[in-house]
Image: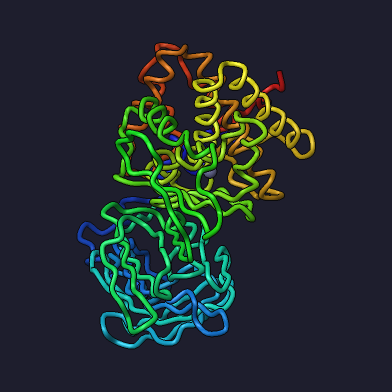
Length: 467
Ligand SMILES: [Zn+2]
């Protein structure tokens, strides 16, 4: 794949110009000097929208294990159309209204949820879609009688667009739960009210907009403890009742946070951060204001203190991933590869150079294994991927090796200056590989384009050699 062939290729403007030129009529003199005003384009089909705000009220402990929700989604139209389409999971829509008028749901299955509108929506107008729904078996929602938590598949419990990483919205998330439960959600808990004798409503609110996939929540019979020490950010660890929150791996959180602040050149971008420790699970998943950490991801630290990757990885996503977000899945190495590399950098800082080399070596082994079993592809490969595991070999592991090569090429000072430039310039933005390359190139006289062509975009020549 050539660079111009990638979705974010630099030549796209030129390609567009050429396409326009080739579409010109052969005899331009045949065009009348005065043309009729263009008719508005027919606007049947899906409207393009930018979601601005979501207000979601959820009961995650409904009868028969059903989750029920009532949501109002505010959006601006960026492309006219008479249909709204969401790549949401199998929601059972009870009713829907657009700006107060009922609209029928088109289908609610794995292909998504759509709404047919009576009229086309025009570009630039703002609207509110209100949907009442229930979900039977939402993906990514782990539930028991006294605990629920979610990760990644946010559009299985609300109407949104999971794959649209570039669409960020602010959020009000109200969780109605049995009295006495603790909840974790996006942003800050701004309200807690009683709803009858045995129910409570906890309202969480974000001030910053985030993409859909990092919105998550947890609720349950939990107990929590602020981490001791003088940290500029309030750090809590939560766990189910009866489970200790004093695992040694969490004690390092503030040191990790300070290390990442130094590398990012940006202070931790929130006043608090929570970690939910669930010893009998294996998740390691970031969310807007908390992370879920399963036992099999963090308990190896008991045997080997250097196995602290999971806490570092999810914490690093607070900068790279949550706030500097890959524009789409082809750029996902900017979330996961950068964070995987940052874990290696933390290990170098905490445990010494050997620990860094071991981490990069592990990444190289994973990547090379997939390359041998399948093929080598550039970091912006658009798919199809044979499996999630293979995608991770590239977007996590190969990307981490690439960043190590870039560090060696640029030298220590220039490389970390580049990382700081990239982070400061792009906080709160959706990014592409070109944004990253531009920031790094600005800090070195060495021409980085051959390296980016080879590793990131894919050149016409053979891909990266194995040595
Ligand atoms: Zn990650």
